[in-house]
Each structure stands twice: as C-alpha cells, then as structure tokens.
Length: 552
Image 1 (tube, rainbow, N blue to C red):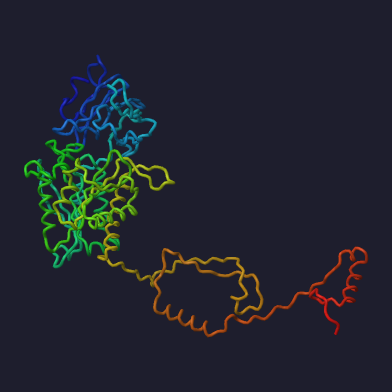
Image 2 (image 1 turned 135 degrees about the horizontal axis):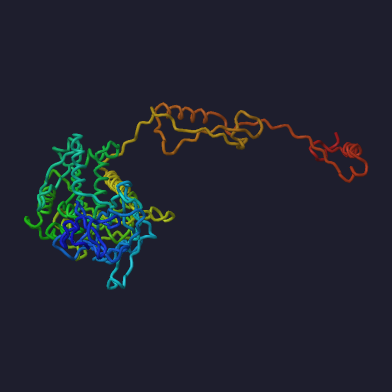
C-alpha cells in the first residue's frame, strides 16, 4: 500500500486508497486500483496488495465491536480496460453464511447503474491454506471500462438518507391517511420516525381501534428489512380496495429505522457504541439505547390505552444463513393463546413469496431472551402477538418445480405487499373486516363464444324428431369474473323453471322411418347375380326389416 495515498489509516473505512506496486513512485497510473469506502453505508477497513493481479480485502468491524464482520460495500476505480484481478475478502466473522450455499455479491458501475449478481463461476467461497485455513471469498473480476467506478456490496444497500428522502416524498403528498412524526433521536441525533397509516377517522378515535406495530432495521446491515418495510408502506398508502377496507378498521404504526446510527456508519449488527440493540430490550437505558427507550415507552402506552386493542408487534429482520421468508414466534403454556398465535403465520405462509414452513419456529430460546419478540410478549397483554419476520439475503424457491431465484429489490417489495395482504386476510377471517361483493352489472361481460362439435341426445332435443349431429353455441364465462345475480335474472330463471315443470317430461318424440335393408346371400350373388338373390327374397316373404313375416 502506498505511503502517499489520501487519508490512509487503519481505523475506519479506507478513503481513496491507491494500490501501487512495490518500488513505484510518482503519480498513479492506469491500473493502480483505487479503493474507497468513505461514504454512507460503506464498509472496507484495509486493502493489501499481493501482486498486480491479486488483493486481500479486510472488512471493517462494527463500531466499537471488533467481533462482527460480515457486510461490505466499497468502490473501485482507476482501472485499465479489461484488467482482470482477484479480490480476496478474508476476515468474515461468520463462517456459515449464504456464500457457502452459492450466493454471490452484487456489483454496479457508473455506466450500468442497476445492481447485478456476479456469475457463480467467478465467485469462490473456500477454506484457504494461505490465510490460516480461514474461509475466504474470492472474486475474479474483469474491469471492462477504464472510466467507470465499480461498486461491490454484500446486499442491496438502503441508507438512512434514502429512507429520509422516501418519507419526505410521501409527506409532501399530504395524504389524509398518512402521518409522520418524530418519535425520538439516536445517540448521534438522527431521527427515529413514527408513521401512522389509517383512515382519517381513526387518527383521533372515538371508539376502540385495532393497532398493528411494525419495527424494522434494528440490525443496520440487514437492508432487506428496509425494502420489505417500504413495500408495506407503499401498499398501505395505495388505493387498492383491500387496503381501503383494512385502513378503515386497523391502525398501522410503523418505525422504519430503529438503528439509524448503525445504518449510516455501515455496521452489521451494532449501534454507534457497539451494542446489539436486539439483545438489549430487557435492559433498556435512556442513555445507551435512546431509540429503544422511546419505542418501548410508546408500545407500552398503546398496550395500556383502553381505546386501543394492540394485536400485533412485528420486527422485520434479514437472515444470512437460511433461504426464503419465515416467521419466528413464541410458545406459551396456555394452549388457547398458542393456537391464536400460530394463525397469522399460517395465513402468511399461503401468501408471502418464497415462504419456508421448514424454517418457521416457535420457541423460548434463551439466546434470544433480550429480543423484542421475547421481551414484548412477556410485558404486554396476552392478546398481543409478537413475531420476528425474517427474509433471506440470498433467495427463495417459488415452488418445487421451479428453479431457485435470487431476491431482488422488487421481490422484497412484493414480500411487504404480501404481509399487508396477510393482515387483511387475518382480520377478514376474524370478522373485523366484512368482505364486500363488487357490483359488476355495469362492467362488460367477459365471455367468449366457442363452437364445439357435439352430439345432442334425443331426450334433450325438444323440437327435433330424430337424433343427429349439430354445431352448438356455448357461452363460457371466465371463472375469475363471475357476476352476482341481479333480481331480474333471478326472476327470469324462476319463470323458466316453472315453465319447464309445466311441460310433459320426457317429451314425445316421433319415431324415425325405419331404414330399408335387404339380406343378400353373397354366395348366391357369386352364382346367379343380384337378380336371382332378389327373387329368392320375395319367394321367402322376407320383410324389408330383414325378418320373416307371416303370410297374409
């Protein structure tokens, strides 16, 4: 590493570190790669030049906590055209992660701004004898354009600034069913937002209302949680009929980012002072955990309010080891409470994209005793259901017959929409939301005419005397657009049934004329011809039906 690189240092992220070969002095040339992580959510602590084609990269640990090293996010520039290098990320603290099962990092550049997965053939997660048999992630990469800046990341970044810009954009719309307020501030004085999404009449309720609380991003490196949370918000502020009915009956309280300091700094699990907030719910301090303090106080106030029925508290996480989406719940000694507790995950499993029932668990794990799921279920009323919704960094199986798919930003949004649909289905099944049938009388009749070649039975043909074959016209209605029967249609069908009952059944059919048949002895034809066979038939008094008749 060069001595004159800008702002080099072993502490914090690298800041435009230029990698020069040994013995080189002067201005950096093309091909001397420049590594940088001095931006929001950036994470790269140290770069070591092995040779001109290979580099060892060290992930920066979480602030004040050197034990946590997993996520990375950095840029590379000043490359030559078609320069091929190998980058080894060598200091993962969690050996068992999704790279072990085939996940690859994502990359984008200034000329290709959309994130793309690196090919599996260029990514190797292996135990390296050159690094004390530690697991190393080796990336074989080709920098194809010299003027591009390339960015590599563990997963799709979702920064604190992006969250604030998104909420500002919604707030400018002045939606009557959306309200944003500041619940508190972090240690570094960043906002902790509280969103309320419900019908305007529920903003100041006169009667009892049902409340759902959604928490997200308590672990700053779990960016998929923010994408899922944004999908929930986007769907809740839409004009879908399902959402409108849900907003009329339910109040949604959403805290989109519980650890804004850790997100801004690019940490994986900890806050700005090195504390894992998801293990601190049982020992909250106003000075060490200000975001948890204001959140816990607010949820407790909701639970104690007589005009509020707090039904759910859902904490959204991302999982670095398992595939798909799944729920982690609690177990109770009360059988009836446990039965109520497992209803929502069953609904969720039918609607959420890539849901994995095999990963869904309900337990009292002592290692999770300080988590929101465990602490809140003990401190709140028995009627409150507390869950952790986990979504994989990696991907999911949509069905058994389809190949494995990577999660993208859009599929994370879709998971959020599926969660809202699950809430709507739950409250419909409990009777809080009454399903309404659309009035489709004024809509165009969605049907198609099919001509089919079919036989018409004699007993069903009223106006035809003989069975036959005809072309019939059939109206086949799309089952997805079945119309409710109007009163006029019901009266018409009732009249038709009464008319049919008045007619004789089965209808009398005129017997068809018997066909004319002749019994011919082919042996006789061979000896005397057709004329001789006809004469023999007349002599024997054989009828036209082929049976002998009595003499008149």
